[in-house]
Length: 291
Image (cartoon, rainbow, N blue to C red; front, side, top):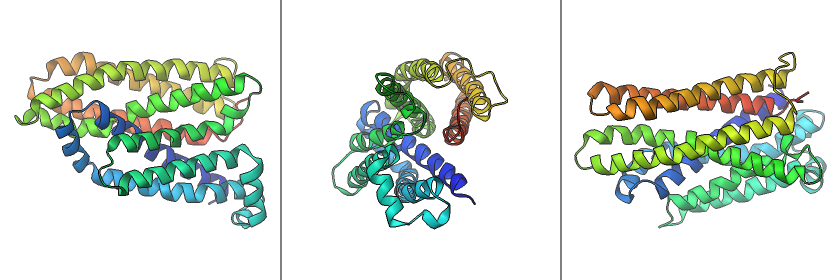
């Protein structure tokens, strides 16, 4: 495997894990009643541990992989002079320092007693935002650079709040059939629906703004790899929005029917799958030239 391919896989693992930790933790911490949140958190414990493990591993690997990609291959991955140069002289190094600090905070949120999901969300948010310090978000100069970074940060946070919360939704849906949790589950789903409108709206508007900032035009030149993959991403996001609208306005009002709950669960799983497909595309075209 080339350093570039390994870096893409690393970026995908990091983004996916950070989005889950941010989205699920923010949802359970602020929108789900505490008793139900604790129950769902327990059921997602393996997911949380896997996501944290991937964050730690990818953070440890990102810097040497960047060194190998920038330098002359694997021989430069752990070359002290190269690593020092990247850390002290590049946006990549600054982003990695931010990523490492957020990872340490995340670890503390897991090991310190009585620290809740909100602390995990607070740690995962800057982990996502650190990605805006490199790549296309840093390509502009002057006032456009901070504007682009803010827009990218909102895009990642809103997308993560939407896609990252879906595993918790899958766990909560069966609770609608349990008398003990039924009322709390309905309240949690209603709150997700309300917050989801905001998140989806932000994903769309910041995505459009990001396309304008990077490509300066609609991504219709599919002979360019970046624009082709961005175009595919846009199509998948449109499909995701369609699934979300179907869930909210067609399936949710019919939850009294037993078959509807099953369809809603599978539709939510489909949202998760397409969401992680989008992340895969982002991990790839984030390394490509847009024009």
